[in-house]
Length: 135
Image 1 (spheres, rainbow, N blue to C red):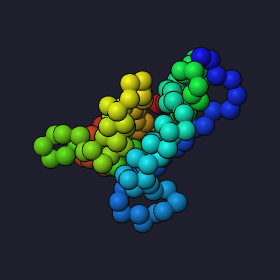
Image 2 (cartoon, rainbow, N blue to C red):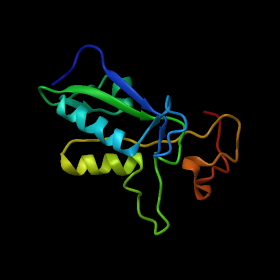
Image 3 (cartoon, helix red, strand yellow):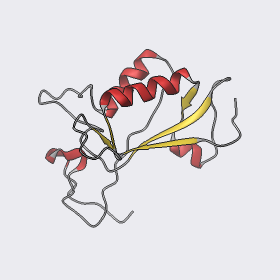
Image 4 (spheres, rainbow, N blue to C red):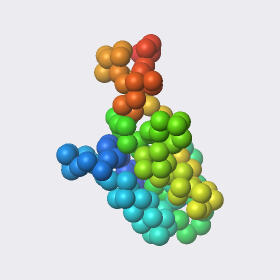
């Protein structure tokens, strides 16, 4: 079903249990609740790229929603010391939600910028960006 009308785009910044900046932070539990509420209210996640290109298609009875994660903070994508994905990071929470229902999709992309060639992506030094071009 093709959707016409306004589409909600939600931008998350910090996913963390330490809420020192409440205006920018959601806890893992709050993000899980957000995802559950969106699903319960009939929202169906779409890719931002699909929205930009006018390919907004969702199953009948659903409304599209776009989830974005800005700033590449550690709570968005984090690997545990054993290399496993942290289930309390945003990607882990989204994967758990996707496992519950077929059709939940998403795309993770990080942008290194701001003129900082040593930017540490997702707060993990092993993801440090050494070289990147102009965006």
